[in-house]
Every structure is written in structure tokens, then in C-alpha cells.
Length: 131
Image (cartoon, rainbow, N blue to C red; front, side, top):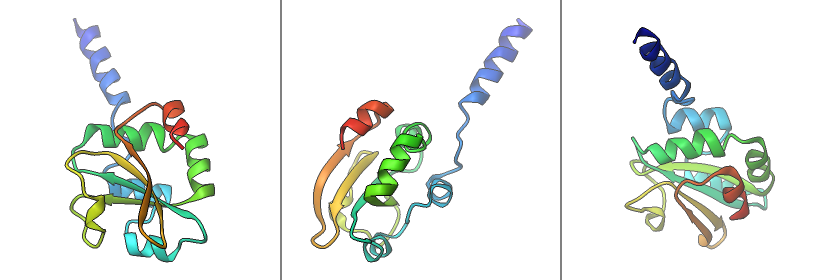
């Protein structure tokens, strides 16, 4: 019985979050947190905006399992200015608000036109295929 308890504790500790919250993710992954700043840094790139909510398990999984993948990270860094916003942040356009999360947006910065909207969590290969 003790073995099963220790095994369960060990297994649950493996899935403990890598990042404390989306701010920690943004800092470590070098994502902008301000939509307007991201637009100013456009560097002739499109914007990649990740919309997340506090306490959202699928948001955390997307951050920890997919967006940290070296292939996904390299693709996003090469083609986009990565930005992350939380539902409680201020100063982001209301067209990005959603009642569910996570949502990944690809946005043309000059006009704020949403070119692509990727809803929810998916595995790395499926996520890359969306681009």
C-alpha cells in the first residue's frame, strides 16, 4: 500500500506545472505581454497572440507541452512576434476576448485583422499543422 501511495505522489509531481502562471511563461519564453508593445515591435512579422485564462488546465498544457517544444518555438520565433494575454489584462482589443481558452491568434498588425484562429489544446504535430 505504501508503494502505491509513493508511486501516486511521484507520478503527480511529474506533472506539476513548469510555469507558475502565464506571466512566468511570458518571461521565460520571451513573449510580449502588452498587445500594443507587441504591435510596435512587429519587425515586419505577424503577431502570434495566445489568449489564456487563469486556472485553465488546457492553457497550461498548451504552454508547457506545445509552446515549449523546440520546433514550435523556432517556428513562432522566426515568423511572429509572440504575445500572451490573459482575460484580466487591460489594453488588448476586445475582438480577442473569448469565453473559452486557450486561443492562438495570427494577426496582421497594421490592420488588426485576424488571419488565423486556433482554438484549444492539441498535440505538437497537430498544432504545427495549423500554421
